[in-house]
Length: 409
Image (cartoon, rainbow, N blue to C red):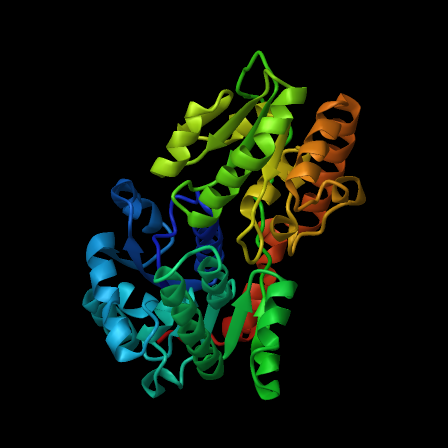
């Protein structure tokens, strides 16, 4: 089997948040076809225990602690070097040394990079003879631009600057790498419009998927609540998720509880910010913090919501709820890149009034909930199972050709 260097900005285990779900499933698939050497940052102390899990899939593992405060100070270097702040934030001499050792020992290895911030380790002419594939996942530069519109000076200037410089970095990496992947055809098409025509044949996508055995409508355990409740799942220190739930509680919840005064709303996810924790002061709002398993909350909810106002790519929270047969009310940004069945489509909305009306409409009929849930399951099973979505990842490396030539580096 051929060797492969896998560079990732966050440890790809446990698969409990969006990017880690995607990176872990990619790692798992690639390990079936390559001898994998992994380098990644660890930004959560609880994740160090999982190194042993990764060794099941990798021949060697290099994990480096990411001290967020120190990394933020380092990122300031970007302000004086005209580089994206993201690059010094995710630079490690230890990962650079690991990368050089792997590629000098296995000089015919392939390279897979997860997220633009990790391209800096292998983007030069030195490695141009190797097959290099990068998964941008989303067009991150556009997310920074979205962030800038939500902030006041001086942070809006910092975020606009990051958006502009990161877009240049994304275009440079796309020119240097053999294949650039994104999370959906829509995201890939958006990026194609940014690159020169000659590079567009190097742009592709790998859809996010769902472990439908794990996120199953037949899952037996559910959170028992006397009153109906809504659920939102996601990492609650991620700004887009924070923005979503704060908007919902401030703009939708007051009018919703006029119709359903005993309704509850569960915000399910680790590391809630102070702003999220403060929402528990509102009647009916429950902030769980980190939970061992989100499925009982999804299973027990009358419906799940995804009121995203900042987003790119595919939302795993939407795929997981759909896989478990839950109806949803979601914004157009949360629905982007996902095949939404016609039964669910009428509940895509971006205004507070319509969001409230959609929830009330679904809550009013258990039969309606069942019909939407059944349609959602069918879409997931037909289009978003990992075993089928990852085929395009292997094709990006010409895996069949590599298997015929089994000489290792």
